[in-house]
Structure formats: C-alpha cells, structure tokens
Image 1 (cartoon, rainbow, N blue to C red):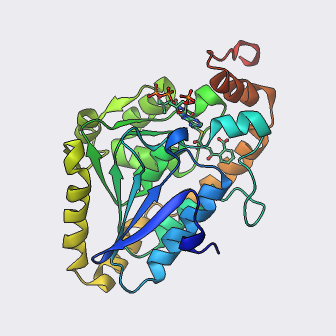
Image 2: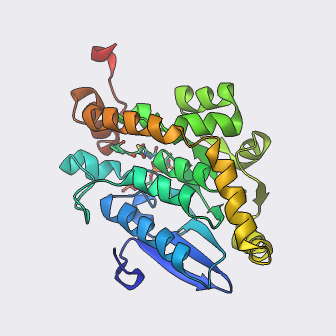
Length: 265
Ligand SMILES: CC(C)(COP(=O)(O)OP(=O)(O)OC[C@H]1O[C@@H](n2cnc3c(N)ncnc32)[C@H](O)[C@@H]1OP(=O)(O)O)[C@@H](O)C(=O)NCCC(=O)NCCSC(=O)CCC(=O)c1ccccc1C(=O)O
C-alpha cells in the first residue's frame, strides 16, 4: 500500500483528532486517475488504522472542484486511467473502503462534484457544501455510468424521481437545491466550509468510537446488497468503455464538442 509521504495526487493530514484527505489535482478539476484512486484507498485505510483519528474529512484542492470524477482526458488519450499498484482500476474498492471504515466520513464540497466525484460525496456519511458548490452526474454524456451505489444509493438519499432526474438530465444543481433535496447536511460561505467540517469532526471526536462503529455498520447493512449491483454494473462498464459509443463520449469531452450518440439509438 502506498504510504502518505509517497502520495502525488492526494494529501493526508491529521488535525486535532481527525484526518483531512484532499484530492490534489486542481488542473484536472481534481478528477481521479488510477493512481489517485489507489492513494485514496490508502488514505482511508491509514485513517482507519490511525489511533489519533476519529473521523475523516474528504475535500478537493482549490476553490473550483471537489472532484470531477474519472479523468476523461486521460481516458480519451490513453484508453485507460493509467497505471495502478495492482493493475486494476479500483474505484469499487474505494467505495467499499469508504463504507466499511468504521469511522464517519465528512465530505467538504468546495466546488463542483461531478460524475464519480459526485458519487464520492454521496458515499460520505455527511456532506457540508460551500455556497459555490455544484452537484451532478455526467456519465451518459461521456460514455459512462455508475449502476451501483452511484444510482441505487443516490435514490435512497434523494428519492427515485430526483435520482432519475440527476442521471437522465445531467444538470448541475446548486448547493441550495442540494440541501433542499437532502443531498447535503449544511451549506455555508466558502470561507467557512472547512471550519464547518471541523465543527462536525470535533463533535464526532467526542463520542464513543464503538457506538459510532456499530451505527455506521447498521446504516450500511440495509444497502450492502448494492455492492452486488455494483459488481454487475462495473463489469458492464469495463466492457462499455471499450465500445465506440462510450469512446465517442470521452473523445467529445476531450475535443470540447457535443457528443453524437445518434448511431446507437
Ligand atoms: C465538472 C464540469 C461540470 C465543470 O464545468 P466547468 O466549470 O464549465 O469547467 P470546465 O471548463 O469544463 O473544466 C475546467 C477544466 O477542468 C478539466 N476537467 C474537468 N473535468 C475533468 C475530468 N473529469 N477529467 C479531466 N479533465 C477535466 C476541463 O477539461 C478543463 O480543462 P481545460 O484545460 O481548462 O480545458 C465539467 O468540466 C465536466 O462535465 N467535466 C466532466 C465530468 C465527467 O464527465 N466526469 C467523468 C464521469 S465518469 C466517472 O467519473 C466514473 C468513472 C468510473 O468510475 C469508471 C469505473 C470503471 C470503468 C470505467 C469507468 C469510466 O470510465 O467511467
């Protein structure tokens, strides 16, 4: 497993009694490649094992993006998300690690949370948003989908109609709308975002870790079957991204043009 001091795409810091994990690729809107996903898994496991840490704050570097999902430019240029430790692109393992780790996770959404980056905030136990944050999925525009937690668990959070609206219209929603839909717990001014996340973390740090551990597993138990849906979905996605239809989506994004999916209707 990669050590925090070897991280290139993510930073890991311990403040008081919590860890702050920051996705640090602002020039790509904090989108993730294979290496980023490996480092995020390592960061969450590190926090899980770290006795100084009661909970984790996940955020993005800069003020533009929390995370814009998979690095579509890398996918368009190379056909993959680049090298990884295991040779696998372990996004599903990241989702599972975030859910399985017994310590609460708090997303501090500092900018746009799109695609697989939106899924990461949805999978955090709590979400705090900056007033300037924007939220949405983008897969069907760039030749992708998340038919696991990214759709099924999203529907648990916001309801079926809203989840289908998010995935079928692909609009970006502002922080006030996200709060109204129950997608985030609090909205604050950009300069107050990390302080609000720290306020949550401080409260959590004062509580019984064992009680929180049982509660987190209890909340998760009711949606754990979605991991099985994810296995089917990501197996399908592995095949789909090799197909001309999916490549049209990624290429169109990299070439800054609208995709033409009409041949596949
Ligand atoms: C995020 C946006 C809505 C922001 O829009 P806007 O504010 O107008 O900024 P832009 O000018 O568009 O972007 C600024 C700058 O950042 C670059 N950038 C943005 N997003 C990405 C990205 N995802 N990858 C690479 N680079 C990105 C953008 O090109 C600009 O750079 P310049 O050099 O200045 O031109 C908007 O940017 C947007 O819609 N972005 C794309 C979001 C997206 O589609 N994300 C990927 C969705 S798929 C996914 O995340 C899951 C992947 C996955 O899990 C998977 C798993 C297993 C197998 C396959 C897959 C899979 O491939 O899907």
